[in-house]
Image (cartoon, rainbow, N blue to C red; front, side):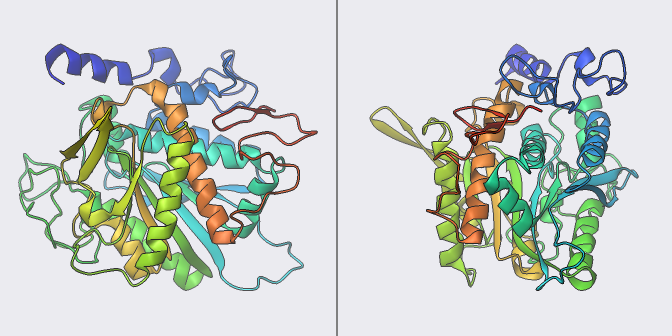
Length: 414
């Protein structure tokens, strides 16, 4: 993609100026222009918020509003502050036991994160879409009720707010955070090479000007340090055990499992990781009738993609940036003890790359929603079991409810 085509793709990824006006909140004369007001729907039944990519200045108040509208099962939390002082916001979604009941053990928690790399806007929008679907589905769908009762879900749409803001204001294809380095003219560290497990392994990128620069020491990247500190505090002081960690990236349509830093060492629960990864990949594929193919593989091999074109098969080697030492994937699995850890690389396979058009936001969200549902049912041991009143597809509505369902996923309307 070169010249005018690149400029056009970048321009088309931004919403109109009216759609990103952060002053348009419920109660104003333009109520519903981008907000999560659940009555503001497009003709397709989708919430208008997901018709475009949204800037940080819109995402944060949107998350605040969601927590204020659904106080029974949603809470806005702050993972920490970025290098430039922005919040790393997250939504904790779950239903705790009644006050009269004593918890039987640590609260099982699943983290779904995106936006570690600033330019990967589809990962941020997808985290928000999945969060919205589970939040608004609670009390209406028995399987959603079960998911929120069995687990706490922590949705972190952008782990890299400083970089994300920079992609909106200055450079659409910026990847790293905005932290100074030893070279004043080369800013930023790669968050997904900054974690303290096998830091620096398998990485030739020690140049501060490199897009994959890992820094001069583990956890030098402020945002990675904040996430790690939050996770350790949860396990040590808040009676939390991390059951799963799902890190969304783009692109190449793959479900990757540990280890990322090498193919020579095998994770101790490899068979379990492979089994669930294959199921998630299948759920992603089937969500749109197999049109978008996802491959499950080890993260150390995740830079090779095989595509079928008619009768021929083409193997493409993609840039090996998401894998290597110091990854969040390996750290959550090995250091925090997340039983299942995955990096899901979303659409597409290179036609648009990091500039995926905004009309892919909802379809991609639906794909990952199917994958998250499969993950939860696997962890609950409910695969093959239908909930009473549900149809075969989890996105279909239950009888007697007032929701509107679609073939490919969940669309709720209150």
